[in-house]
Image 1 (cartoon, rainbow, N blue to C red):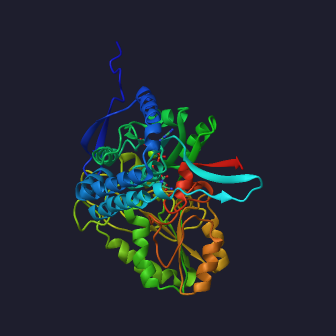
Image 2 (image 1 turned 45 degrees about the vertical axis):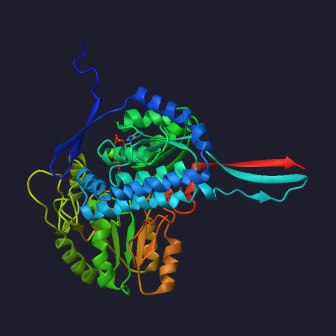
Image 3 (image 1 turned 180 degrees about the horizontal axis):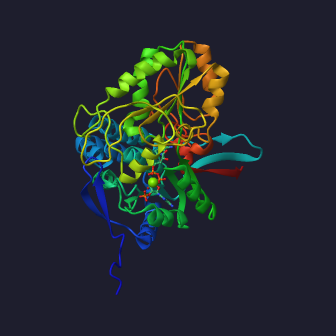
Amino acid sequence: MPSNPVPDAVVDVIEPATEAVMARVPAADVEATRAAVARAKAALPAWRAVAPRDRALLLARIGAGVEAELEALARLEARNAGKPIGDARGEIALVADTFRYFAAAPERLIGQTIPVAGGVNMTFREPLGVVGLITPWNFPLAIASWKIAPALAAGNTVVLKPAALTPLTAIELERIAREAGLPEDVFTVLVGSGRVVGEALVADPDVAKIAFTGSTAVGRRIGALAAESITRVTLELGGKSANVIFADADLEAAAAAAPGAVFGNAGQDCCARARILVQRSAVDRFLELFVAHTKALRVGDPLDEATQMGPLISADQLSEVRSFLDEVPIAAQGRTPDGPGYWFPPTVLAPVTPDARAARDEIFGPIACVIPFEGEAEAIAMANDTIYGLSGSIWTRDGARALRMARAIESGTLSINSNTSVRVTTPFGGFKQSGIGRELGPDALNHYTELKNVFMAT
Ligand code: NAP
Ligand code: MG
């Protein structure tokens, strides 16, 4: 007899600030995945037939249910993902807002009539069918909600595989949705590994679309698997975004905002502005300010209200992030707690040449590279010298220059004199190898619907 016949039957969920097991969750396997997809498929006709108004009300009730449990969900997310409680509250509030925003969608899936000869021509936005969602551990419930809400609003049924490291808030959301009145099998959460559950979802012929957020390497694999059956994909992948700071900028403001943009979520943020490009004449002054802010960052217990940065997600992530310190000078480092937990201090590398590994690869940890540039042309060339194109910032008091830069940088989301990337009402997604498709905002529904054209002879 095999001594360990079901090795993946349970997922141990670790709290990264303590390295303790905080939950044990039953894991799905390939058969359970097939069965969940089959049930989601069977639930489609009834879900499609729900009146738009009633689908809207259900989504709004899910948003209200999330809001009603905001504090408990935020604490769960903070502990499981190791993020500061204040940040976790913001993310759960974003989840509630995402459901509210897409609650307006079922009644606004509007087609067109197009002038043609001999009849009437009209278009419809039809649901795709069963949509499979695969999500990462860095913003667990927020990123899942950007997919779940528009997918349901458009009349699809949904099977979600959250990252095995952080499945807990997704499990709670499944319960909240059920309590809000969402019919059974319209939204199912499957906990398990990407290799097993994730690949089974992608390969399942009854899954019409995969919406994925995660690494570029896994995105490439999912894209290849999905191509076999022409399964639709939306991919939100990695980044190595530039924070371009000109000498004419409000340097105090830029330096005060920069730590949050690269050390926020302990740098485990696909939008992290990890390449700080600073005009040469301002480098010394910027570094002085930026280093002072970095050293003042409070790293510690995610549930402490004063904490600004928590631990990394896992031991693997910690050793991966450490490997980037080999070849570059450390200009400054913050402090971390001792003892258990996957701690890594906020770290400033300078001066860094643009070809250093730390300046090219996505680190997904709290490491900032400060890289000098001379003028606008060099700043554009450096900002674009990457396989990625997800996010970025431009800091200058010259408005025309800001817009010239914004048009020239190859990136899906840019902010001027700000480091923000995500709003529920605006599109989010990447150029180049940062992904395919857009989430949130007015375009998101297009990624969860097929466009149908109908002609009737008159
Ligand atoms: P990841 O390793 O790519 O995992 C993401 C998800 O894919 C997890 O649920 C994972 O499952 C699953 N997965 C892994 N291998 C798979 C496979 N062969 N087939 C199907 N699914 C598979 O990424 P991560 O380590 O969680 O997150 C970090 C990465 O996500 C970074 O590169 C970051 O830039 C990117 N990210 C991008 C965005 C964006 O919007 N563009 C947002 C956040 C994060 P398990 O881990 O449970 O096995
Ligand atoms: Mg991974």
